[in-house]
Length: 213
Image (cartoon, rainbow, N blue to C red):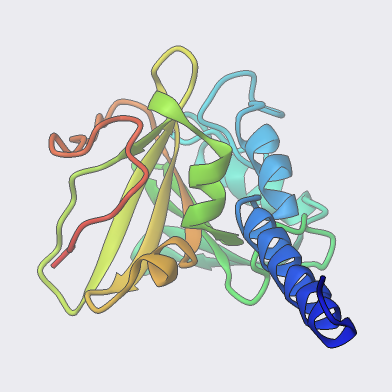
C-alpha cells in the first residue's frame, strides 16, 4: 500500500501528465481565427467567383475600382498609390478581422490597369493552415530560392481542384520543425491562369518538412 507521501507524489505526477496532454491537444488545434479566415477566403464574398478578397478580384478588378473599394472599406484606414511600382498599399483601421496582422500593410499589384494579386499579412501560421486543410486541399508549391531566407509556398485548393489562394512564409534555412510550422504566413491572392508547379517529391497530403536550402 502506498504511503501518504508517495500518493501525493503520484497525484502531482498525474497532474503534470494531464497538463502536458492538454497542452499537446491545444497545440494540435489551429488558431481560433484560422477557420474564420478560411471561410472568408473561400466565400468569394462581394465578387461572385474566386479568387476574391475584400471584394477585389485579381485578374478582373481595375486599379480605379480597387482604389475606390479600399478607400470605402471598413477594414482600411489609409490607401497609398505607388505609381512607379504599379501598386496600392493600405493601413488597417482596427475593424479588420483577428486573422489580419495590422502591423504590416496590405498590398496589391497592378498590370495594364488590372489587379494581378493581393497580398495580406496574417497572424496565422503554416501549422494553422496545415491543420485546417487536409488531403489534397493543401499543396506544396515547388519554388526553391537560393538565398539565406526561403519563401515556403503552398496553395489551398477548392473542391474543384482549383487554386483558391496561395500561402507564403519567409523562413530561415536554419530551422527546426516546430519553428517551421509556427512561421507567420501572408496570403497571396493571385489572378487566375498562372498554374504553379507543385513539388513532385511531396505527396498532396504531406504534413512534414525537409531541408529547404
